[in-house]
Length: 282
Ligand SMILES: [Zn+2]
Image (cartoon, rainbow, N blue to C red; front, side, top):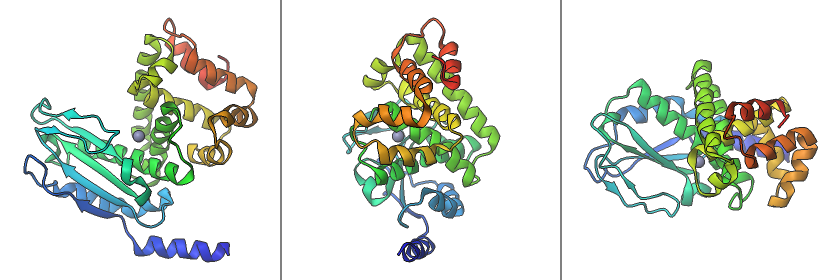
């Protein structure tokens, strides 16, 4: 039976390349830049293979320059992009309501997207990989109850592996991204305990510190974040399952460190917190 399913999965992957669905021209009336379609088609197979999705992954790319977006999804804040300066890039990507159907929607904002610059490709690919990680996450369990630091942190950490596997990023890109996580997370730690910031929706505390938490946990057991996440998804059906799973997987010291990382006040020594998390001695 398993063989039949694997064959079906292979057929589905072969028959359904990543499909790019350009949106209607944005409110500003500009078309989606052609270079974005080229990038996805060239790299689509690799992305599809590593996302282990059911064979249909649709990307919808829209461009909304210099105007105000009224978000039609509940989890996307209303964004005023009228302030994006000339030549600048801003991006909103989400999987929200349509994630079950394998759809990702990306909004490109600002006229900096017109040319396929290195910076533009870098940002677009990182966001795409992040959203693909969410799709796989959603397939594994209902993440509605999950703390943002675990949910967004996993997507950030997993994105780095997806980008390397799909040859969209180099090892140097990944090192820079990790440095960025450290700087952002340090800034959050300097403000005080992370948990209240995460609950208040702070982006640095959830995304950057969450990514470092998943990376530290993965390195602790010498597994990639995706492998660790499969085990997590099976074991942690309810929030109460998190502690027992963590103690069994990482041992009591690392689990305690992770808890301290999220709850204690390291405003006087944020670097100590990052080093202590990685070493499991907070
Ligand atoms: Zn996300």
